[in-house]
Amino acid sequence: MIVAALLLTCCLSAPSEIVIDSDTITLGALIPFPASDARAPISLGYAPNPGLARRIPKYEIIRKLNTANLPVDDLQIPESILVQRRAVGLNREQVTRALLDAFTQRYSGANIEITNVDLPPVQVGTGPVDISATLPAKFDPSAPVFVRIDIRGTSFARNAYVRTNVRIETEQPVLRNKVAATAAIQASDIEMKLAPVRGDVPDQIEGMLAKHDLVPGQVLTKDALYMPLYVQKGDMVTVKASSGGITIAAMMRAKASGKYGDTIPVEHLTGQGSTTARIVGPRTLESLQVTK
Image (cartoon, rainbow, N blue to C red; front, side):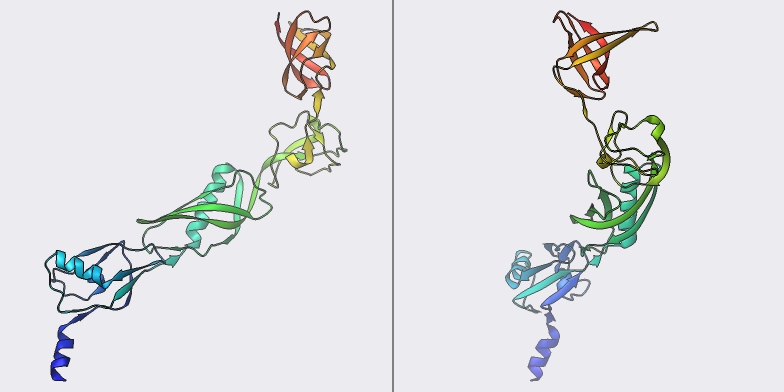
C-alpha cells in the first residue's frame, strides 16, 4: 500500500477532458508539468475552433515524447483526452455597430436607427474578433432584414445571418397631389421630403404611370409605378428636331419599341433616310442624329 501510494504521488496525471483558451495545444496544457520540464512546450498542433473539441489519443502523446527522447514512465495518461476550446457568444454591441456601418454606407446621409438585433447562436473565441456586415442587394427596411455578418478571429473565420429591424429616414419623392390609376406622374405632383424608407425608389419617375390610385403623402416606390411602352415597333411617331430656337416636326415610323427615355431608330415614311431619336412622350421623340 505504501509503495503504491508513493508511485501515485510521483506520477503526473492528465485529465480525460480539458478546456483551453489558446490557438495551439501544448503538452503542458494537458499535463501539469513543472515550469522547467522540457516536455511542457511540446506542441500537439492547432487547437479546435471556439466551441468545438478535438480528441487526442494517448499514442500520439507518447509518440511525440519518444521522438523528442523524453521520458514517459512518470506519466499517467488516459486512452484519449478531449480538448475543448473555450468560447463566448457574439458581442451585441459589436454586431450592432457593424450593422450600423453597413446601413450607413448604403444610405449615406440618412437617419438610421437599429431597433432590434436577434443574435444567432454563434460561438467565438475570447480573443480579439473582427465583425463586418453585408446587406442584401435588395430589401424592404419596413420588414425584418437578414444581414450576413463575417466573423474573424486570430485562428478562425465564419459567417452567420442576423435578423435585424431598422428605421431609415432619408429624403424621398413624396406625393403632394392625388394621382389616379394609370395617370402619369407630373413634376408638380412631387416634393422631396424626409420620410421612412419603405421600398425601392425608382431612379427615374418622369414618364412613369401609377399602378393604382395614389394619395398625398405617399412615398413613390417602384411597386406603385410602372413604365409603359410609349412606342411600339411600326408606330407612326412625331419626331421633333430643334436648332437655334427653331423646332420642326416630321411624321416617321418607329423601327423598334421603347419606353420613356429610350433611344430607338426611326425612318422616314418613304423609307428614304433614318435617324435615332429619344422617346419623350407617347409616340413623341426628339431627334438625336441623322444617318443615310
